[in-house]
Length: 631
Picture 1 (tube, helix red, strand yellow):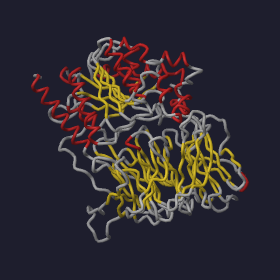
Picture 2: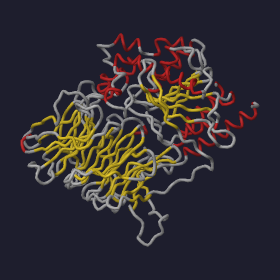
Picture 3: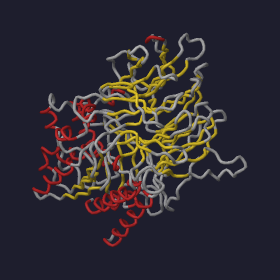
Picture 4: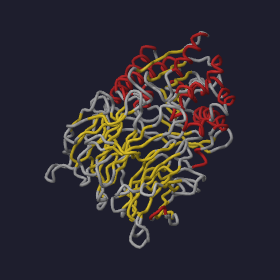
């Protein structure tokens, strides 16, 4: 392949990245109580904004004619999430302050009037919680900006702005309220050890829903009327892994004055995690979303009979932000896959039929690559999996044989680490493939979706195991014949960026190049500079900045920066206060001082997540050109 041809291929790959980033999506739906209208977030104009539209087209309209959507402007900042009030009168939105990590809470009428900020500012982070189920007040949570100070939650009246204290705790999040607001369910605890309590607001008491402390965490809890004959007025439905290998559905009857019945398992699977849960207002129908090896599967559960009904024909591999209507007739969720961005679909829960409810953007006329799920072993024999995207040959078929012209590969490490690589829409991956670079995206130990034990294998003193998994992943690419061992790059974002720096600093000679996107370069400076509530929650995952100081220093790539002897691209958001931008500045400066090849891309107006289309285009282009030049 000539240099001119290579340049032409890279230019085509960059153009594809721009086009795919422009292929906007829609997500985070919410419905009116009658399920006739919905609001959602979409970046169809380049920035995540609030949109409102009808759920269904007119009955006499053709099937391919969808209702039109209308934007509602709040501010120039990205909208993160939206929920509709129980009385249909208000929408509440979470808005990223200046595009950064801290957020504000806004309310607005569904016609776009009376928009106002009710919590949060540049100096104070505020989180959007649920609406009261029968009234018109919304929950707002405000973490402290001072170390050691508690988190406070409030009920806010959007019309008047009046606030009422709801609860105080260390790392609390309000998950649900009873109809009369007498009971509130809160989640508390550090990463991987979250637990739920029910707060009795009448008697000023709180009780853990499940025994605490215990093994395993609880992710979701809902309060609903109990089925007839249970002897209790309410049931708490939990998605929990307490005393179980994976998240499952547990029902816990609740009575007056903190009375609790015996917890009962309603649904569990040995091959999947319960990752999302919703219920109708009557508590008769539950929506369950299972994560099976990274792909989504849906079930409906009738609480009166216990019958579970699998929902067929999910129109995509991965579903997110599901919502069940208050009458149980309708589900709306976001669906995506490697070849199509996030779009909203509606499920009729009685007929079990699917209907698309948002417009679909045009995609470039190219064949996008579907990955395969690969299984392999870590250096210690631990079973691992990852999604492999193979380069297509000139005829558009996937190349399965080793080929010197296609012998480069990018290892992509996800963030978290309590996250999971899944077969979603990823413009960066498809652009790399168009440039002739294969992509392998693994789930190293510590990833979610594979059970409680796997998710804790990298905690604190288990970090070396995750480092070793990165090396095993590179070796697997060579064994498969996908990549020349001299032409593999390691890349990642957030925790994956930290793993990238660790691989280059602690295992020199394995990788030919690296890309660190908003990763931590030194764990102690991360703790020093990050938001207080982020630092407080992280100690169970990384270690304590005082008690484990020597360990954290030893595990910090900046302490071995002189060993990084291959080209490195560092990218970071200007306004990132989760992994603060100093983490990038200090590693770039250290490498520059010793004359190493390092490039730096700082994305203006971005925090830890890059929400603007032009920022994502700049990043994808920089990555393609960097790896094409260095592999």
